[in-house]
Image 1 (spheres, helix red, strand yellow):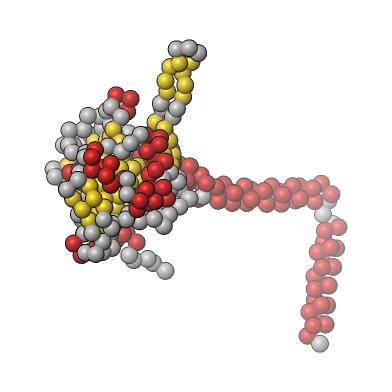
Image 2 (cartoon, rainbow, N blue to C red; image 1 turned 60 degrees about the vertical axis):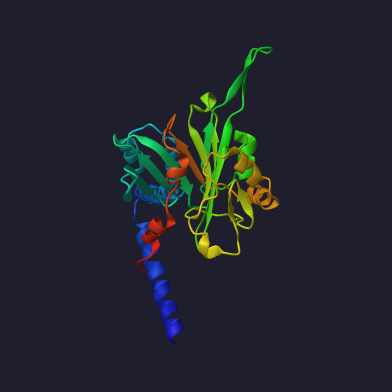
Length: 301
């Protein structure tokens, strides 16, 4: 009975609108149809633009912002590109600024004049893979043409072994492993072709990891060695300073390191200002997970 009554009301309502529609002039019906179509298209376009801005567009802006950074620039330039830093630290008389984005972290280390002498970019999203390109070319006197051989490092994709094939042998390494922390870095110095800047590629524990971790068993570098049997003594211990050619050669020749470097993807790119007078072993390379993780401790529902 209730169903029959509902069906009767539905038929009456349909009949009402159908009858009323007949009294609307034809040109008015056309205007109403066009207006409805425009309204629907407007909602569709607005939704599409909003979706693009929140996904692809937002990521493209992030790429543009970080790839436009440069050592030697003033910190105000970083603020203009990245917004205000979330953290400011003072380390050995230098100001360190940390910028946080949903896709990446940026570390900027400044001198007393607010000039950036070193900056690092760490990807924190497996689908955010900025490519840092260093233009490199040579002139072929026979063909009288410039042979392009750009050096490209893609965060989250390029492995340490691939980086060495691109940039040449590492000039130094740094490794630390603790009870819950880890980190690995390789530096490259190219002299004049590299603008006398240092390039450091790292696996930072605050960034995205493709499932590879630095090996710690019997890694001998010069006079320093780490033994995996005593993890409590490994916290914040570095394997060699960045400049130790013989130590680097010894460390990278072990089977554990060869395997690690062939699989581990670089997640942090660091570059210094030209002719940096401070030893890399004395500088923080990349963000500290113990600091940035406090932003993710509390989440609102």
